[in-house]
Image (cartoon, helix red, strand yellow):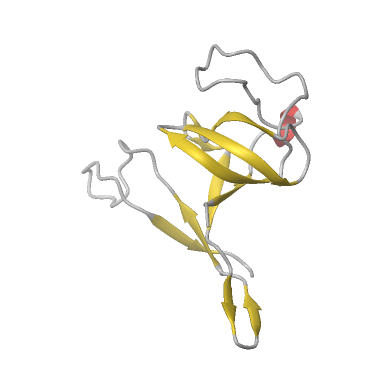
Length: 121
């Protein structure tokens, strides 16, 4: 199952900019911005650029967005729910993907890694 992402940025601007192509110079999608809280399916991830398909929320059905702008996350990858015999349990973890040049260990060394934080399920 392809990864899902949630829009967490752009709330003060009516959502995040969606472009028709991968390049930052590509035209903006005429349907508008991808709204705060929207859930999208990852189709392709190249650097900080994500090609998506809208699963839930408001915004263009598909396009390209920027995952992180400077030091702010615009989208975060969501861990998938897991099915059990008694039903579905939603994961209580959210996966935060740091920029490859970000110091994630606090020791001054730049190391790509994964940071998990607990969120309410």
